[in-house]
Length: 388
Ligand SMILES: *Cc1c(COP(=O)(O)O)cnc(C)c1O
Ligand SMILES: [Zn+2]
Image (tube, rainbow, N blue to C red; front, side):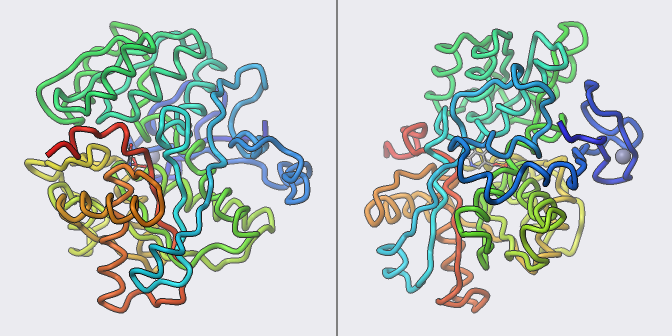
């Protein structure tokens, strides 16, 4: 609609809109979509939003799809921002909120990315999609591909939660289980895609999943009546949502919706796979691959993120931080959040709570600050994690 061009997040090289792209043709880093915000803001106003549907396509003017008939939707987005009064009182926080992404189609926020990526693939004439996934991206791709009448080819580690494997099969995807990690699955997609005619929708290796996920930033602003919170705690794998929200804040400022103040962005990772935490602590901008990655929070089992520098830039620019929590801590937190608030979190989402406690202890968050925990998925997909 209002897309002007795509721009490399590292070297800034311009790429043409309305053409198939994966990474930057010059440096191999992720591409970001740029818009004419003056034009977008003519019809997309705070007032106009009051009349729009409660899904993420309410931000239509700042999403990349050109023609409405190409939108592939299952009703994703505009999830509740729940005040966690009881949990807050238990731990000593007065303004604690949980953004409950478990209520999306396919029970995780991966639906946001895939609605945008599959819609754009449809618009650009793609018929076959492929993705390496630790679980939820696979389920979301399978569902949106089915909805669009496209083929989905999915590569997952053998120890992916069973619910993710079954949902992909039941929504008609071609599923391959592999010995190894998501990075090995990604390499397999890379090896075969050309011969098979697949379009690779690996996170940040195509430009549109981030556009779907950035809507979490728009929603937070809208749901808080255009005042961003003080702190956002985000369980980080590939970092698409964190990078996306950071982009959304700049876009909203360009449209005059918010000022220059930003939340402190906090990355949470599992101590068994914490490449961003390690790079942040060492003052680096690019993260080394994390060896022997392991955690029951499968969405956090990303040993090497191609958008590492974009995540770390946002953490530093916002005055945020990066914190690792153990699997024991995040599993215990699932029950603590669930029994206080009635939200059955994905283990990744639950990891936000021990991270918050760490920040309270070291004084980097105050009890009266407004804090949002991102519950990125539903615990129902992770029965194995809770069965011992
Ligand atoms: C994929 C996933 C994450 C990590 O998301 P990124 O935006 O890639 O960092 C966190 N939680 C859940 C439940 C996920 O499926
Ligand atoms: Zn580049």
